[in-house]
Image (cartoon, rainbow, N blue to C red; front, side, top):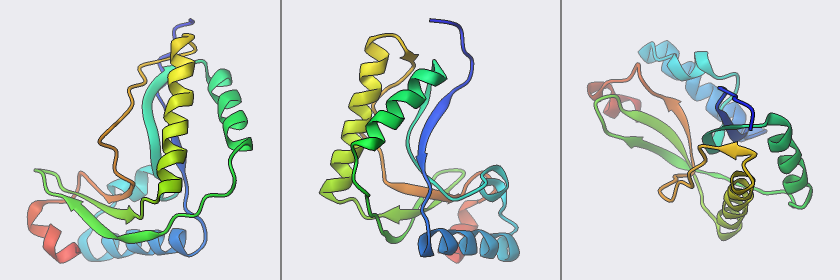
Length: 150
């Protein structure tokens, strides 16, 4: 495999009301708390399904087109806000995990593992502790702000 230094992620962007609500949350965080790290580093709120792997981009895109062509539309809905309390807390939109959504993410991981087995990607590790979330604040958040934000 050719040497490629780019790391890739498979993300889904919410649309409609969920997207507008997430962008509104970004604006509130910026205006009220001066929190902008995520909103200034992402063009749109998104849900990362898999990340951190590298490889042949054309093969990855081909697999994703083939994979998504077999998928029917998937609906997800918000399930409130959450926070991981660490030295730099992570504030996120929680997504309701349904059986259909779980099966979709499992099939995607399997497709990425198949690409890795034939050495078209590398560095892919299934995340068995994955949480369905969209981060809206990170790095410029501190513990004392967390309760005010939520």
